[in-house]
Amino acid sequence: MADPPNTPAAAPVVVTPEPMPLILTDASIKINSKELACVANHIEISPDTTITTLDTMCGSKDYPGVVKWSLVATLYQSFDTDATEDVLSAALATYRASGTPVPVVVMPYKSRPVGPTNPTWSGDLIPMDYSPINGDAGDASTIDLEWSFVAPPVKAVA
Image (cartoon, rainbow, N blue to C red):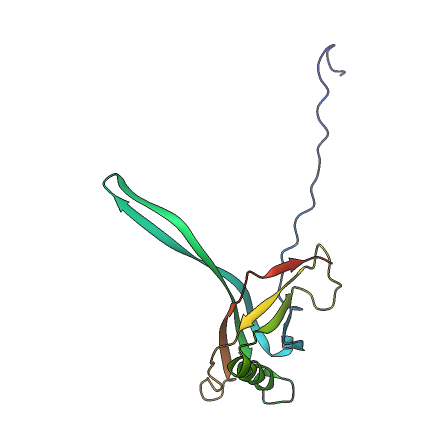
């Protein structure tokens, strides 16, 4: 049956493809240009916003304050050349000696080129002390890092 006269036609149905979630099986974490993906178990770039609360006779109001960014990572300890201990201890020694932060680059898919669907986040970190041996009998030794960025990380798509 045809639409009655002067009846607008139905809008076409647009089917949007379902977004693909990021599953961290191919991520990259490079500290001082050294790839640590094969000893990484957890990678997170995390903002921490301080909140300032002002209490007045009219009530309380929260205001966002300073945002501090951190790299949070869990790495398996390895004493191999250019692996966990070499990279972290060198970064810490350099920072202690000269105050030079260490560069970091995090990427969702190390096997794909950088682009809009595979951006990188990069910046300079302030290395801090870490526990070089941590674990239980029969378990892998892990290092839990939480190193602060000097400035907010920069996202790049090219």
